[in-house]
Length: 286
Image (cartoon, rainbow, N blue to C red; front, side, top):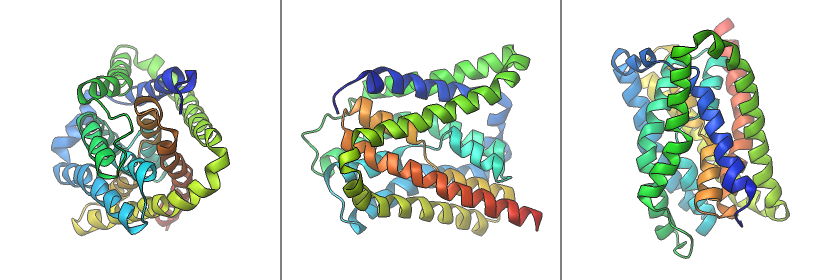
């Protein structure tokens, strides 16, 4: 994909805006959940930061993916949860505070892990001709569109709490619109190859989504977490930050083919998330 205004300017700005919105929902006390819920936090982080990349790597071989498709799956698996996972957890009556803390902490850690995992994937899956991610520069760029906007959002919430509360809903709506436009743009760019890309990456991304949702729930159940924490761990394990993944592929790696698994996953994710919300709310009423 040639660099365009969309990938070079709009996409990073849109992601920064989405992360700013997440920051408006955060405060320092939310991070106390690391101490209050150590078992839940540790389990959630292990699922997101260790098991997800390993499972993504496994699926690449199961579905016999190669080159850009394989690297795209690994980009997706390397990404943390995002504001979408917080919203889905909330709508599913899960532990929203735990969800926000997991998203925030994993976002900090993946600033370091994303360039390492992606570069290993590029070399391993035969994409040496692609642009690799310079680790130092990538860390700074990801910080610029994730950590810094979140911090600004937290600062605004602490200084202007009333304004932040009023801005929360409009920012959430705008974030959803931005996210949808980004996914649509990525798919539209490769519309002629979409059917073949979906045939290649669709089964793998659907399996990744469903299996990580299920494994997250089962692991939380085995470790005797309460029901709200089980829902949170499931969602945080199975819902990834697709916007960040598309930015890594389209803006940092300048490779449109690598965005396709992430874009397809993002579409599938919303469908499965609707089922999770429905089932969780039905179980809650029962």
